[in-house]
Image (cartoon, rainbow, N blue to C red):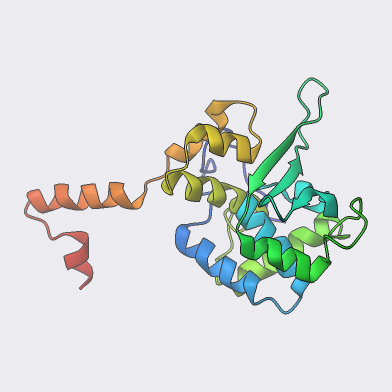
Length: 209
């Protein structure tokens, strides 16, 4: 596994390496997962990417947690709060729910049956393999945790309110979710490009043409 120095409350390691996948890396990962030769590995990867859940939370999912008609997956948070069991409902695309039905038969099997019987270590390795196939270079971002951070960023940049992102990710504190406001988005780059143009410098678009 890739080990990184702890830097709590940040999207970067102590060495300045990002911990999240970019929008382009996320797109490539989704494509690689969608075309994965192992269907059940593909559903695991897509579930991680579309829910932002921790890999252990994904492996704990059972058939009864997949609400096909209602359009969400009920994820049990692994971080207990005062001993209470916390379940969060995360909306997911219909395409993922249909794939879970096709690959696992979630509406037909025992509601208590787990969807994946992999160990955490093995699942971590397999997901990393799909990331490699997607052309994501090695680093602290190229991990299942990087997918979780990528989900948070994608949600914020898509206009999802911070309180909803907090709920979907299962964060106890809003301050934890607020780290996704740190990363520079497309709009910020465009604003910077206009600023440079006022300095008489070519815009980003012109520089790459």
